Length: 84
Image (cartoon, rainbow, N blue to C red; front, top):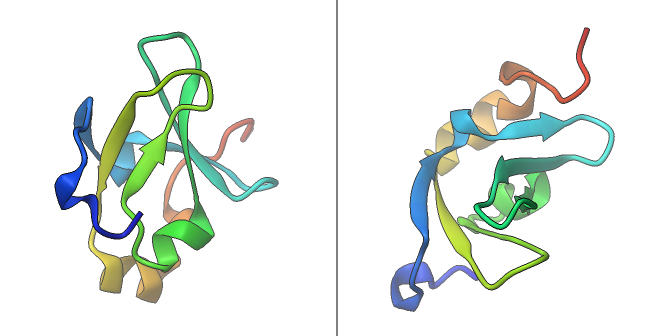
């Protein structure tokens, strides 16, 4: 969903507010419906910025710097789900 300019978002969320699961390589963020918005590391690396909730129709726009994300492999910089 690279052309996110035409979509209506529930909100815009900084990538740092998402949780990253090292095992599944998926970033998640709480949705008001009780589920979680999801976007994969691969989608972010491809320039996609739309995280969707699998349980409802809401979407959030992920705010991040694509070049910086690709350079730093941002997944290593965020707290992983289940980390001790």
